[in-house]
Length: 430
Image: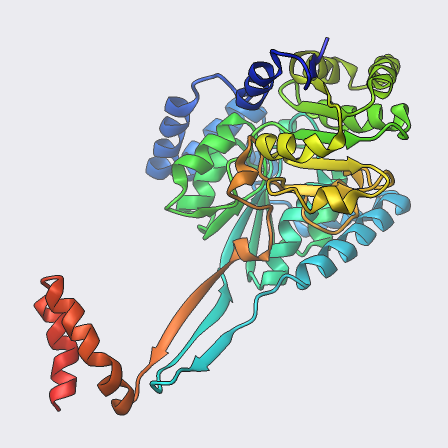
């Protein structure tokens, strides 16, 4: 059974603290294995990628092809059901429109001393996109990761995806085409991340790597950060739902299970001021689990990491949510905005009873790549900014340097850096 907490109980603080501090990331020590894979790819390049692909994905890249060719891509798109293609195009349109609105603007000013200064934004030249190919084929992740890169202005977008037995889901291929991915490679795992970061004879390196993956992929991104930029090190998915008594328990049950079915380590939490609603939702979850194709995974997640929290008033909810700092937050109440105003830490918030988190996974518009494991306290979801960098600039006239230069000389001398001081002073003397 999921954890059942009540805020008016004497042991609530301790129980809630354990819920907040629970670590659900993989306990496996994969760091050494990943380090060895990265070193191997750096040393042997394509040969290492070839061998590791044969070992883990059971196909020969030299026989089946390292990259998807144009005819394979065309066939996959032509054979995709029209309803699915239309859904992908609708999602892409909405995601693109939302991210276009995020584009930062260059700025420039000339201050009172006559110094001209500003900021110029530019996209990175190349980005890599990792697409999982294991438990599920996430065509939505292709759109969510690739479209912001292209909106930002990335010239070369490279997709890697593990292809057990050489097969790629056609919907993933179609999503890549719609999102304007430039290259699709049949490689996955830590070796794919290493190849993107360091480059091989076949694969040119990239500047930023984004996209979800298993523990090995996450660890590879962690170890290679600094050599390349990354979006984030993501952990298990999570959702917190704040619900009043007027909700449909069956709707809430579906929402809770929508995250539980991702992985056994996912977490779903319901907060309500109605004990009746909580009990009915628990019953509805059981009913749905009996019919769910992903019931085995969802049940393990729900029974191991799931929780319900009964509060005396929903006014208590924001403080609890802010401590949890969840990836997804649903405010399933009649008037969500007053509660929303008090939320400081959440990856993405879904307002009202008719905004299930799942709509954000696909066609809402805002990005579904979000910080997990309480990282919403200090980080944000994927955006165009993750594919861009800003360059500042200064322009001093002789007169402007005369006004601000003496202070720079004083500071350089105070820091014991005479060459710094002379760099400015020599110009002031002239």
